[in-house]
Amino acid sequence: MMSDVLRQAALDYHAHPTPGKVRIALSKPMTTQYDLSLAYSPGVAEPVKEIAQDPAKAYQYTNKGNLVAVISNGTAVLGLGNMGALASKPVMEGKAALFKRFADIDVYDIEIDCNNQQDLVDTIARLAPTFGGINIEDIKAPECFYVEAELKKRLSIPVLHDDQQGTAIVVAAALLNALEIQNKKLSAANIVCLGAGAAGIATMRLLRKLGASLEKLFVIDREGVIHIGRQDLNEQKKEFAIRTEKRTLADAMQHADVFIGVSGPNLVTPDMVKTMAKNPVIFALSNPIPEIMPEEALRVRDDVILATGRSDYPNQVNNVLCFPYLFRGALDVRATTINEPMQLAAVHAIRSLAKEPIPEEVLAAYGIEQGLVFGPAYLIPKPTDPRLKEKVSSAVAKAAIESGVAQI
Image (cartoon, rainbow, N blue to C red):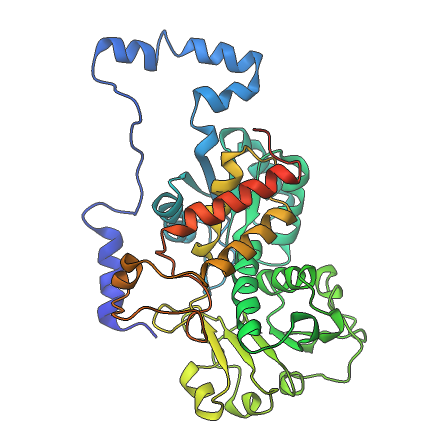
């Protein structure tokens, strides 16, 4: 739980000296009468006529090419659940601030009061001409799968559901490095995923693309292991229904090489960790309280590699390592979508950066005196690593070009 002091500090941060975290700034001078005549009437008519004749010129005469919409209906806000569209605004403003801070991308946050998935798709699609890309966020499963898929069909700009692809990319990058350190192969690993919502399903899909075996993936929802005998599965969960006698989380954890938690606090016990295979990997990503606290896991296993979603433990799995740069690379080449090759390029760029020496400025930002090196306590880069922008964005842009979805 957050302390009273930290809670008040967070509220004060958002309230003072100006409410909120983002604002609009002018990019052109607007001080003289002549400036105004160019910025608005009569000068503004000229780019209007140009864009009417050639819609692609919107990228030349407006901010469309560097503008992303961060959109939510507030039905799955953080770990808080359905808080409503308006209550999601601080989170969407936060995403806007991260886009600007890390990738210099401008953002309008948009909160839509709508719980019908088709109406939500239609509303977002009608807003799309304004933007160069769309990031949907905090929309509950399974509606989020439909919304993202339909928008990708209808729009010719990048669409990303960060709770799906963003999470999956960072988890995959960290997991590949953890398995390398533990001398294990992804294709042979028994993987338990606790949580079958947006993040869990997307992560398992991406791990399959990277070589994980479906027969070795044990996906678990509130009713237990997803197996072929279940009659209560939606289309997304059916992808991961396997033939197995395992029914509970405790069953699945026996001899597991990997545990990935995207569910809730304190759902994994030390006794479950004891039954895992030699040299296991545990990604307990529930925030702010993980599925199992690192110290509890380390108390019963000294051969485990751990990651959480928290900044006060090593190996923070944080989507900010991915989404700003995924969009930066896509926008830079005016990609029509964010496809699988672009996502895989981001995975490999992030994981490879962890093997390079860390800049002094990153160490200073985290109060680290001695340099971190690639290993159990350093699987992926820190969010403040300035090399992420160039390395990940360029890898994504190159993949967009090579896969034929770049327009420039």
